[in-house]
Length: 65
Image (tube, one colour):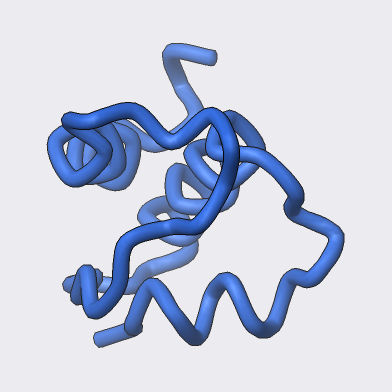
């Protein structure tokens, strides 16, 4: 299991929600079984339905990028 906050902290080069979405997709492919959304991403482009979008990215991986 991983926490969203841990992913964000360990990748300070990620500066937008779009980049975070790609990072989450890679995490899903790397074998992480569960991602806990323990905080709301604080990016200017974070959409209202951010949890749904990150869950979808985590589930589908990078195969649809």
